[in-house]
Amino acid sequence: MIFVALAAILLPLILLGGFNLPATRGMSISAVVVIITGYLFWQLSPAVLGASILQALHKSLPILWILFGALLMLNSLRATGAIDRINQGFKALSADMRLQTVLVAFLFGGLIEGVSGFGTPAMVTAPLLIALGFSPMAAVILALVADSTPAAFGAVGTPLTVGLSNVTENANRLNLIGLRVTQLDLFVGALMPALLIFILITGFGPKTQRLKQWLTVLPWALLIGLVYSSIALLSAWLIGYEFISILAPLGTLIVAIVSIRYHWLLPATTRNHPWQVSGAPSASRDTQTTTMPLLQAWFPYLLVVILLLATRVWQPLKTILTSTLNLSWQHILGFKTINSDWEFLYSPGTILALAAIIGLLVQARSLRPLVPTAKKVVGSMGGTALALVVTLIMVQVFTNSGLNSGNLPSMPMYIAKFVAKYLAGIWLIIAPFLGELGSFVTGSTTVSTLTFAQIQADIATNAGLNTAVILAAQLIGAAAGNMICVHNIVAVSSVVGLNGQEGAILRQTILPALGYAALIGLAGLVLTVLI
Image (cartoon, rainbow, N blue to C red; front, top):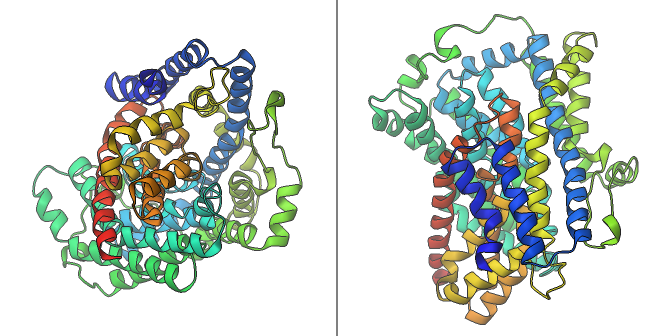
């Protein structure tokens, strides 16, 4: 039975990562196999399977809506020339692509994660990286890997508030777990800027002097990583967990800009001979000159951050947006636990689309480009929609498999209990991998934690381990799972035109993901000795 339960995990790895099938084919096969085995071996009724398929179809709509908003934003900025002006601004600060990687993918992406979540950061930052001269493959991989450390706290602490709701709703307890997350990540998460630069240089740069090109900016990368982790730790200690994913990237972004401006810990080459990928647009030609003010060019992105923050923090506005035009579908086919949420006005997709429209008015003083741009975006999303739907069908059958007539636990819980039976003695090492596994399948730090938090807590109690440390490891592992989540890969690939390359992307993100979880496991061992 364990191999039946593992089908939803092994098949995507084999078909996409091993056989390099495009997601439309690989995930279609995976979905069919999981449905058949769920019916034959897990005794799932046709009604449960049907409800799961309907749930997947509905869940794909808000994700596609976010994708539409991100693409509309990108193409609108291209139409007005704002992307060129943003590129000029980055080049004025630093044309070095190593530094741009940290600024855009890690810090700006982290800020978007803090106010939005739901896979939005990578869909926003990957196109921006391409505009700066990064190849589409580099942009996708860097954006996915970067959207890990900030995701532990997600959108205003949602992975803790919602993800741990089955374990505890005590504010003090949640704050303690949040503090443990920042303690585990104090040195591991601090390595993220250095890791991103390493991936850029070794995977996409010239083959000569790779180590030298990395080591020259390593002191600056470590500074930025330590500043980020330190702000996160201080925020958890002094304020609470809810705003860590906003304060940490925002504060670090300010430090990073100042450090680049005054050349702290940076070699002269970053200013005089900035590192570039050979043949990249920003290396081979200057960006088209535009006189648009930099603030005006950035206005749509700034508006996105402001609107996302306001709708998540200002409770009266949040109440209005979540209750008006609510397209959620509850109790699908009568099953109380099979639901799908889509609060249309509250969705990041709506905010992205609104910001793109307002951006056109501010930058072009006309909405004339809107309709042709929207048509172009919709026309490009067909393959993505299919890949996303079949992926979610597999995911929902997997997660709803507890509704069976054989009195079996759900497939995720069966896997967790099977692993715990044999590996409880080294659970401090295993805990982050279980969190990562949950996000790989479900695509959500919150859902992974909601699924596995109880069993993580039970194992910690039975093994005499520190429960807060184990749950913190679950959260960080789940956040790292964003690097390899199939439907995140599908969505981001679509934004940059890499449909069909999902397997190649997965092969390049899986090692950073596994390495991150392993380091967190080791950090957990150290932390339990110190506290």
